[in-house]
Image (cartoon, rainbow, N blue to C red; front, side):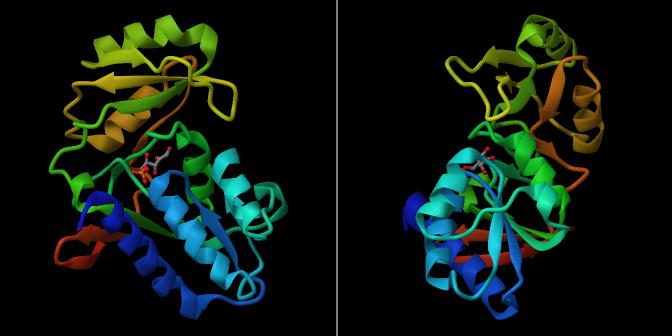
Length: 224
Ligand code: 5RP
């Protein structure tokens, strides 16, 4: 199977995982990206089996609505059971790097409201140490140079993601060449920099379940 087929397989596995637990008042938290898009497209067939969704990006909100799935403002719902989203990298503790699609801040907010974060990813995303994928950091535009200098001090090589403005009106710095041996520590260190909105390390709120698409089928992993 190619990478796209693996993404479709994990999206289907996530639908199978949640389907028995859907009720008429169920709200689902929905992520962003190509794997999440396969999940959203599959969800269309189940749209009469649950209430609606909270989306982690404008793009996902539009896609959900295009399938007739109601999209709610997070502030109008309480917490919910499931958040389903892809990732750019995962380690064995299901600590993640996210933000390849620039939606990391809203993804972290929606994930924080869910009891169970189901991550869906193909096997290329599994790594021993996070950081081979450049770490996305969402930054207030006026702080771009300052934050970039601080990220160099922390050992990374930040690159401005040209032409990208997040749904929150900010910019993204992608930080190359990090060996993230202590994800929880680095997540806090970067978030403390003035001008940083959020970074793409999901270590304080890792995934609870990882549905990993492999050539031998979809594996269901829990954090070690
Ligand atoms: C978007 C994300 C995505 O989950 C991540 O980039 C994975 O994307 P894809 O499913 O397209 O491989 O964090 O901000």
